[in-house]
Length: 383
Image (tube, rainbow, N blue to C red):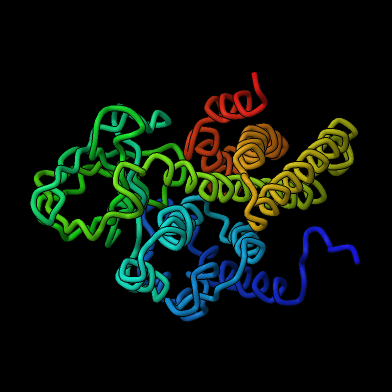
């Protein structure tokens, strides 16, 4: 018997319907307001999402989650596009996946109870702390240190571009516990109420403006050694493995944004007329969008291939890197043309394509640049 690909069923559709309705009714109506304010009521919304069970789709049931697989997570990530706000989507995915997926994979039962379960319940918000002023994609060069002192780690250093930093209750934090290079890095779970921790300026960004991205600093911050996530000096491997889920979420976010932009463009093309007929009837645009619909479908199936490998427990790095590279770079072309199709109105903030165009510029940069993806793919291909 042939297994359907992708294996969507009524349960997946139920998740989709719930997420789409929540986004359309609770999030999308505020997309302009939250972008203008540079913040969104994350804690309030996360508590509402927790009631619906949407914060722990892949989290084990004993910690309050649904205990479902990557296909359900994919359905969830895809439907978040209906919020029409890339900043909100990024903040949500950082909380539900990017900062916490690794806890579910390698955390101890005590760590899951202390950090993961409260996130699922909407009581705590998570951030991921890897990037530093001098180390972005070059993770092996991070300089924030965690010195062992008795039963504690004493942490000093700084991070930047940290999404959710201003609202987080804890940070999944990359620190240097050993010698220089990738072999001296560890992951720790860092409570933000720790003495010596400060949130610096909120960075003024081109896009994803509803979600904060901040500079943060650590000055003699003391946390217990039991907050070590995974093995001491094994953090680089844990980060690389966790990046696969982060990058896959980014790729799915890009596909969702492209689909939404194309749907909006088609609708606009039937309403807007030029030279006596709807602009969507001009061959130059019909052919352009035919190409984009084809490419977006290819991007989606590449993501699904990566999801299938993740779910099967296979090594997903090549597939995920390809999915991230292709979706992120394609989004720049698709969103550009959708904005161009809107003419002058596409340049006006009241139209969703304007915000989407700004928001999606992050994708080829965040979570590993497109250039890094090419390096990974070429190495895995044996070049």
